[in-house]
Length: 82
Image 1 (cartoon, rainbow, N blue to C red):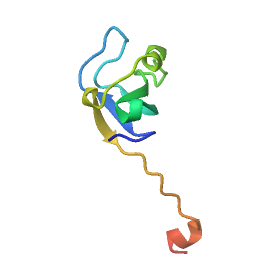
Image 2: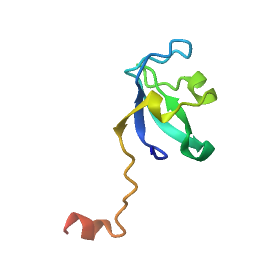
Image 3: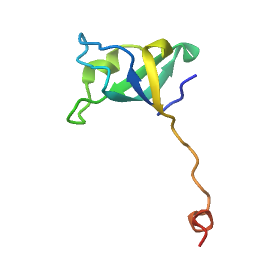
Image 4: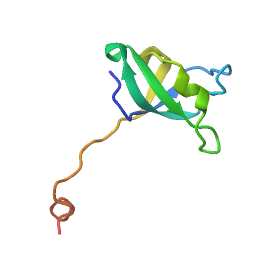
């Protein structure tokens, strides 16, 4: 299951939304008990494709590019070895 803030790409172009499969997006909402996702996609100029925020995507539509890493060390000096 994909997580909030994971970085994804579409498996296929969605030209009706102005999204090509090489555009990356960030999961900004998980809906319907993890069966649908709202994804903020960005174009070649790193601008939000607003239309992407008004449709739901299924996990089968998406490819995980980079999982969100929510690990934040409590003590940055200790974590860096200093």
